[in-house]
Length: 532
Image (cartoon, rainbow, N blue to C red; front, side, top):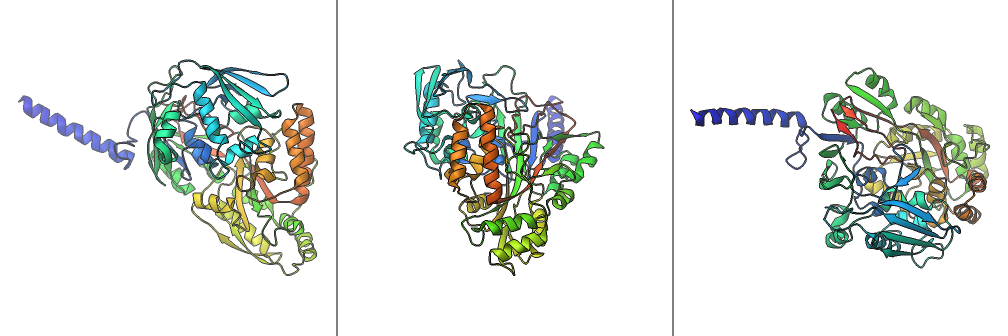
């Protein structure tokens, strides 16, 4: 009788297990999304890599910000600096020395100690690298060790819990730069032991609230709770699954059906469907972005500013915003959004004027137009919900001035790699600010120092460079703002891009998701999120 009871119970348990598994999809044992305290985050594209210093894409930072941590952090929904792995800091009067006092008792997920030596190890690793290895480091700190523009002179461990940075010149956004996701501190032991595997399998490498478990490319990345996390009562979740669902409509359907719990890249046209469903909730990410059409300035005929100005006049931005952003965007005239200090609102936008565009093309020697390739993003991004459709609209606009644009696309990682090498004529791309500072838009995206990394347009202007370096060094915020306004005037005249839109990105979630706070940088820390 006892054996029979156990047999019946076993059958029932198997039936319940099968039912739960069926509801959750085919995640497998390591990525079992049937777990009651698992959050499944549906997103439009996969990560490029999981070593944060080696990548520049938002999909990678969306994951790494939950595994790794930085010395200082941003606020929950802003870019104000607060304590992170450093609990306090002191800045010398001349702005050349920063001394950080570190949190005590923090360990990496591999059990080794987080301390000043670990901080020094990471910065030495980065500053001795190259732009190909660590593109963001050079962008934010003026190059690498030995380069004339490199801002950091040295990083020293004063004692186990104190680390000192000595700079060659003041850098106004230095603290904000340190808070950026790519400058997360990794376990020296893990970095050395994992070697080339680190970028794809950063096992036990961070100090963050979640640990890496599994990555099935173009499918899912699985993280699990760090049981020994140093911040009390965090994280709330046991597991996070980042699931790649490229199609916006498919991602929304997955949310409605309960297959996922959160979805980014929501089409503005679907907002009403979400708000009218009591089982769902709509989120607006604070806007800190720009979507643009980049023109590779080293390729003919885009090396002629008159051609670039003509293309600016040929794009009907408002029609694009009305058709694809549903009012959740503003037309862009500068490379950075109006919320950034130093934004130049006095600049006159290139109005949609086909006759002026044709006249400029004629002056440049192209009265009958020309043929070109127009690269369209294969994935939805916060600054551009549907790159393919936007490309088609621009293609139609260009045709009106005799410019025949062939639309080209690639898988996302390939797209970024090829565009960064200057292989595109023109490419759709965008930027979500990393730290809320003008430097992170103008210097990072358009300075000659960053050609081959984040300056995909291969745009170079020596006068602009001098202004941007002066603005970095100036600590008076009013004076910095004036320098950035002058910089935007130069950029506007040179027209290396066609700025398109500053969007308000939309996300949606199950009503069961609590305390999800979308961050303006796009790097969402999920340690405080719970499911009820």
